[in-house]
Length: 157
Image (cartoon, rainbow, N blue to C red; front, top):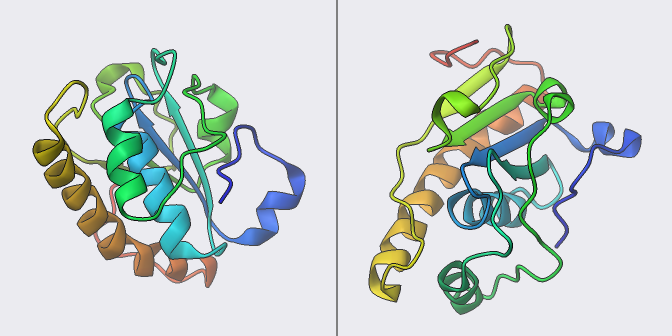
């Protein structure tokens, strides 16, 4: 499983491009990106980034994703750039607030999800379950973007 760190021209044919952003890009956005990449099976391009990236992915997130058979190997927290946001079809924000850039015409979803940093594994599992539920509900809508169908009720920046 690979979540690209920078846009590549060959990625555009893979389906809609999704940017998942949180403050540290070490927990929530990583979990959402890995889960989305897993369920989409190559039908969307997933990128994750943060407004103030951490040095490494939270060990609690690595552990809970590993319990589900999902790897974070090769993933590192990284900052988002204007280019990443501009390239995205959908931007999912999770706690980066006003630090996340807003581009007119982009579809934005703001998910209020607890920060898993330093939390006990039982709570991190519940946080990842919440993210998992949101990703599964969103995926059919994302795949409809690839067919150029309108998505009712989505906020546009």
